[in-house]
Amino acid sequence: MIKRILVALDPDSDSRVATQYAVRIAQQTDARITGLAVVDTQNIEASSRGGGIGSMHYAEKLRENLTQETREQARRLIAQFEEHVAGVGVRHVEIVEEGVPFERIVEDMKYHDLLVVGCDPHFFYGHPKQRTNTLAGIFHHTVGPTLVVPKKHRMVKKVLFATNGENSASRAIRRFVGLRPFGGEVSIEVLFIHEKHQQVDAEFHLQLTKDFLEDHGYDVHVSAMQDEHRAKQILAHADDMDIDLIVAGSTTSKSITGYHMSKTTEQLTDNERFAVFVEH
Image (cartoon, rainbow, N blue to C red; front, side):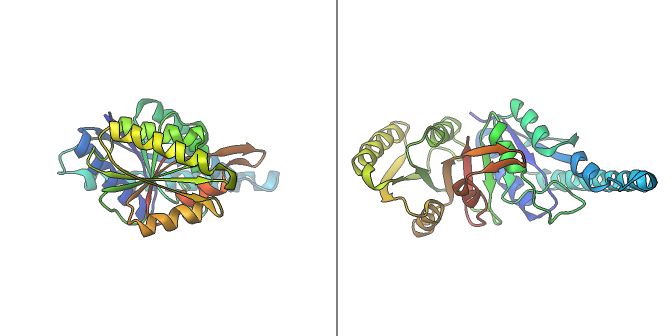
């Protein structure tokens, strides 16, 4: 059951689409939406560091200017969010926080059921084209699922559950079934991607998954294919089947340079056509 939805706001078109998805889910589940804007103090600090003692004064001024600019952008995002949700009949609140974006989002997700975010979040408002590893940090730490939205909103009627039998994928579909963000009328296409020697395992896994989902009231179809280029195969299958949403597990890692997604997770969540429901 979904009763609280967190929308992470970012200064690009994805945030408006994220809000559209959140509103649709809130109307379906009678949930409250929280619009969150984060002032990225970590990147502000990194961008304003001086080169020596003589430049410290200028670095401080730059930091002040960047912080003020970012706070103003955060307030604009909140105002746009309020304007979007006004009059649609859903409960909503708005908050502005300061800190490292993924840390603030992870903390707030302790008290929300679902995070909705754009496919290319930056959160460094002063440099909106600069890519960050915010999503990887969220996936690595969050206690809840994330809905990564595409560039355009689409009604969710047909869902693709992509799996290779790993636990993260099983957690994803169980969470999706438990929350029912788009109701119980959607149909589910299960795609098992397997290694060459796993054909028998794939058929067994597909039957168990089909039985599980049918017992939860879903219309289910299953298929399997041999693993070659996993993300490309999933996206191509989604295209072929006219899918609206992909459900998948995520894999992340941490190194000295920060948090990183697996190649498959990155390519799935970076696509601009399909929403992706992710569980770590």
